[in-house]
Length: 368
Image (cartoon, rainbow, N blue to C red; front, side, top):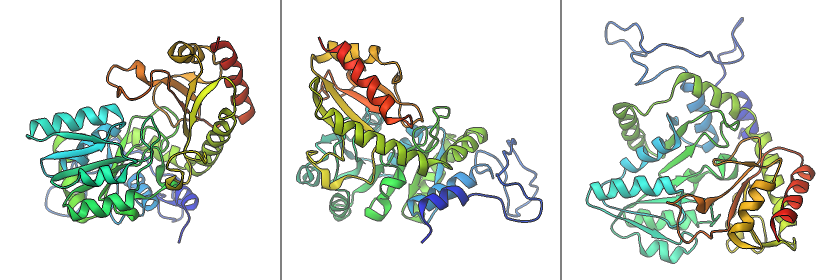
């Protein structure tokens, strides 16, 4: 079986014929010559050859039988995935990405349903909420609390209950886990994050386990126009070529920083799936580039820490080559169960000693 690093480097290339380019071209055309019923592209809202290399490469990484469906953003992909479920109740992690919960609630309420939030790490609690639910939206790790779900067990119980299983695989990436092989019906990505990887693209993607779901999502994407531009898709594929190298460095940095911070005298708490004391350590994906940090001194110390760093960029989003951090509860719609002093750190590819020195120095300034 072809390994992920090779897929990333080789997939989606033009055919190897004399004089062919190494990279797929960007086709800037909204429409195509088509005067009859012959096969071929017709209109760029339906399909375009600039999407295809990205969609094929991501499908190969996720082990999907059908091409990925590129979207204008991660939220567009989430919306398409939720639309694929029948109307009704949606089960979601209490610590989901807050915009995902907003969309799920708006959709459920409009259709006469509701969103039930659960502790996604408590499998019994999740399973008990599934009967009668139209969909379960999983994040593992969750954003920002890094809780881990037992995806195979939940997927089995969901299918017995007739519930669609949607997994947001943004944090883990296909290099960390392949949810379709674990029983998921739909996998979504904010390709803005690790896949594109350079903080210069807004993009999303969705993949389906069955042809019926793939067609349902293709129809919804096409009819609503939540499609991606050719240049953004091309940039995302170019960024994805180095995902294997970036993810290896990023996850190594995150694990090492978490290990060091766990023993730091100015740190109240740190979380990362690689740590042995993580409550669901055995469910950890094969790498995670995000960790959380709670400095001693509470919210005020957390705010001072953000401002005291010089290498760590105070910014939202994650998954770029640069390291960033933010206090999540500064957003009004973040879950109230997220601690006020919790900082989400997204590790980049910088030298580990430089990142550590900057954090250690900033902690000394912030904690008084």
